[in-house]
Image (cartoon, rainbow, N blue to C red; front, side):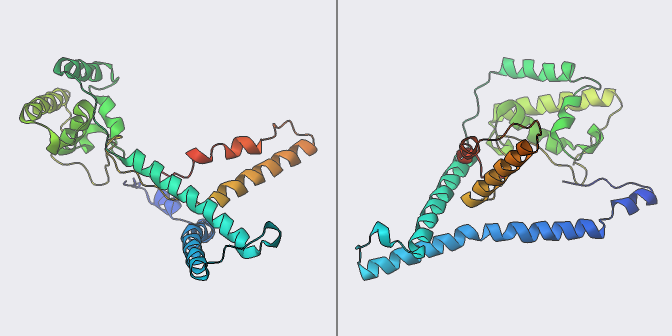
Length: 254
């Protein structure tokens, strides 16, 4: 995604990051990155412990003689299970789904609705799907073809049949002609820094966080809620069960 820069010197000076901003960024990075190494270390610890136990072939253990190593092993099993669930959920979300079947008449009706109900200039609705573009003159015809292939067919441009490609070219040409009649000339390629949203085709980037992170943040929120209630603040205390019930849906950072 591109960043828009001001033409005035005053705004350029204000856009420069301050020392405090850089310090807070470094502090946040130093606080977050240790969380990223917890899960790999726990996987290594779990595999090493299982391998060592297989070599010893010792299964004689008592609940009364559990050691710190055994407690850490239980935690490692829970964290690794949470990581497996995260990876399965991520793979399910990243799986390519079959696009919905839409007839040619319905595509034409949807196209005309976008043209008439977008508000403002014709086809202004399209601008919302191109982050970084200030006007439609920043969007290139080549990217418009790629986006229209997803919006009306649910497919990538290379996956269209010859008949669908012909229909697509007609719709894109109609869009370009309508904008030209309004004095808006679209370039062949998009302006540098202009992106594109294709919700069902875009790659989903995710980063795993350990279960301990969510347990700790839920506990801190509960403690803060209890403290505010103690001093008489009108604040609804949170429930730990409600916080932990969302664990199955969290862990994805977009």
